[in-house]
Length: 256
Ligand SMILES: NC(=O)c1ccc[n+]([C@@H]2O[C@H](COP(=O)([O-])OP(=O)(O)OC[C@H]3O[C@@H](n4cnc5c(N)ncnc54)[C@H](OP(=O)(O)O)[C@@H]3O)[C@@H](O)[C@H]2O)c1
Image 1 (cartoon, rainbow, N blue to C red):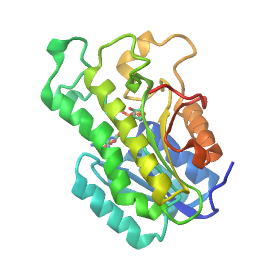
Image 2 (image 1 turned 135 degrees about the vertical axis):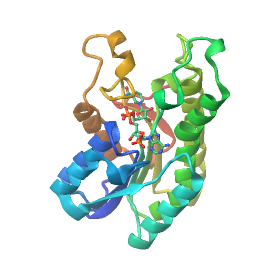
Image 3 (image 1 turned 60 degrees about the vertical axis):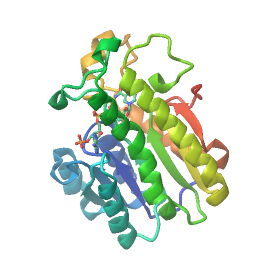
């Protein structure tokens, strides 16, 4: 186990609600980072982040950033880079499975596939995290332990796909995993202290899983509180040899 340097800065991308908001709360309460940047499409208007601001003050910096727009990612990287000489932790949390405002639902059959929904799913779930790596990796390369983690999903595992369905989400998460592994290989040569991870949180009680919770077996729907503790414990314990790995909430590897 290699620990983070005390007092540096972290970034939670996709922090306005759900697991991302919970991760911000845990990081701020632990006071391990002097500053936590929290981004989302409407981070500056998020009630959850406003509540954290009232509890933790300037240690939290909410920042609007739409992960589906590269110029927004580039602008955020520039702004954070002007304020911080380094980041030690970035967690990409944003993800989309359904969105009623765009008529987007997980597909049950081939006839449900809509190219606009495929594109949106890939933009948020797959392109977003790798564009974050493109624009932020330099801030992580400082010679101490740095983690670039992206929340993925077990349904993105090709080997584990026994049920079918959910075309856009499954395929976009598989692409996200491939992007993460490829970046891990490159950064093992260019920035060997940067650890790139794909993490599956398990089925968690948030808006994303809400329409499907009726099917979850007893004891398998986790709270945000439980999942954030699990994910942060994994992040604390990883070293360079873990870079490129895909781990579940319990630390077990998931096949690609
Ligand atoms: N919950 C589960 O059961 C479960 C299971 C497996 C994997 N996961 C993965 O875990 C991650 C977190 O999921 P969650 O359950 O916390 O979901 P959630 O409650 O629906 O939150 C999704 C987050 O993504 C952000 N987001 C969506 N589109 C965005 C965009 N274009 N730009 C910036 N941010 C955007 C949302 O912020 P705004 O909409 O406010 O911008 C929100 O903060 C996702 O990657 C998901 O695929 C979740």
